[in-house]
Length: 316
Image (cartoon, rainbow, N blue to C red; front, side):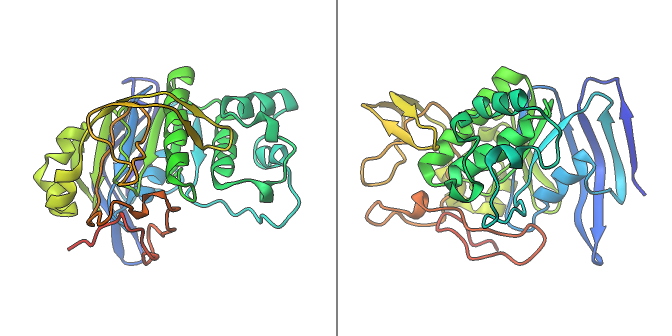
């Protein structure tokens, strides 16, 4: 049986040592070591069913470990954006009301949180009228309402088009800078790895490899899991850019001077931002127009994978 404890020493927010979770007669994760320190961004990557969500939930205490130990700081305050939130969009509910479903907060605090994510003007809007990007921003504001020092984001860009993904990743990075919180980010899309990610942890039931984005891409374990083409396609590059982030999560582009590789497809669209991307495409570009701009397909961490995006891989 695992040990879970709180501590005010050591400086880490969460420390997992040899953690395993056993459910339905199988190990979902086993032997996982993970340390989350204040102010850092950690990105968990891996195929469907690799244990990313289980690892994150175990780190913050939603799931109990059956093996190993989990140590959490006494000062830990978690803001959690789940992969799926059971909100019936057909019900009449304003954004401000959704913000306070599980957290008590006055109107000024709600307005401040919505302002931080750029959608204060939508506080009286109906949830069912929000775009995918606006809804994800509302969920992010709801998590920030708790003033967390650890923000856990499970697939935060699902249901958002590609330009909206970039805007949300920019926002997450900005929140880390302005609020000083650590970020544990679960990513299903290997074509985006934030340049400001301090560590990437590659999971497949256990930790296959961990380190900086570039060191993980060069790891034999990463290449074995995702294939040589995925590793070869992972490139860090910088864009000097002139663009505006719109409230709905879209990006209005100006003229761009690119230093490195443009990855927007054969139609000439660049990403228009300064960050590193992990390109894990398991497909040819053909005429240059790929499925990058479509919404992410839903999937289940522990269940059977749903129909996949064109940017996913066939795993051996």
